[in-house]
Image: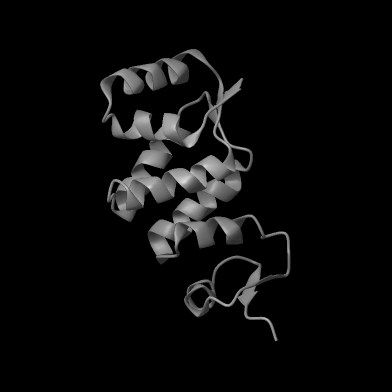
Length: 131
C-alpha cells in the first residue's frame, strides 16, 4: 500500500495537468492507496478555494474516489459521515470531519457559534462553547 499527498488526489480529480493526471491515474490503478484524513481535509479545501468547486461537486468527487475498491482512509466511517453532514446539513466540511471523529466523546468545545447551531441535532457528541 502507498499513501498519497493532496496534489496527487487533486490532479486525479481535476485533470488540469495531463502529465500529472496520467501519473496520478496510474498510481490509483496499480496500487492499494491510503488517503490520509489530513489529505482528505486539505483536498476539500483546495477544490473549494483554488478550483471554486461547489460543495456538491466536492462530495461527488470524494465519494467517487472512496468508492474505488483499492482506496482507503484511516477513518472511513468518519469521512463518510462528514461527507453526509456536509452535503445534507450544510456543515462546513472541516467541522463535519472534526465532529465525525469525536463521536466517541461526550463534547466538542468550540467558539464557532455557527458550528454549534448546525451541529445541534447531529451525532452523539454535543458541540458547545466553553463556559
